[in-house]
Length: 152
Image 1 (spheres, one colour):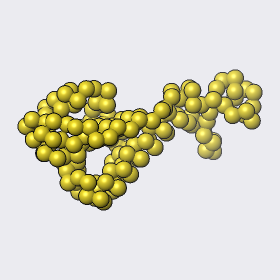
Image 2 (cartoon, one colour):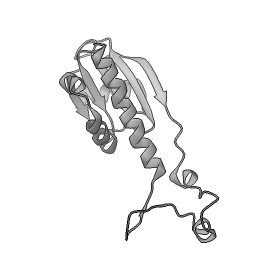
Image 3 (cartoon, rainbow, N blue to C red):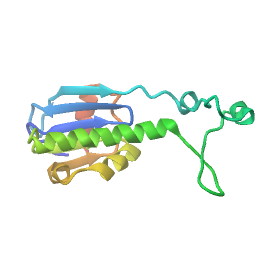
């Protein structure tokens, strides 16, 4: 994938986002960190503690269901927090695009996060989006991120 000089590169998942600027050129990337943001998002089992007003049987099984008529669906608080974090990331991109902080945007995220980001892209973000890579690279060192982008 071509990552032009000064391109804005966002590497995100449902818990962490890394903002980079390519200080190199399209062939020799040099990603420099501009910002890192991480949210605490414990596993769903830790977030789904039953409120004290739930029935004893519900607490005993640790159940947490969304009411919705005849069928009940389990609420995944961990996934909800990840989706909300992706929406917040898209909002940050919107604000930066409207301030003309970047001309070219590359987004790297796992497929689920990428899908959630796309739901919230503003038209200014979409116009500046030069490429997407559906990989989870938030836990990788910068040289591996650069290598993955160059190979894409």
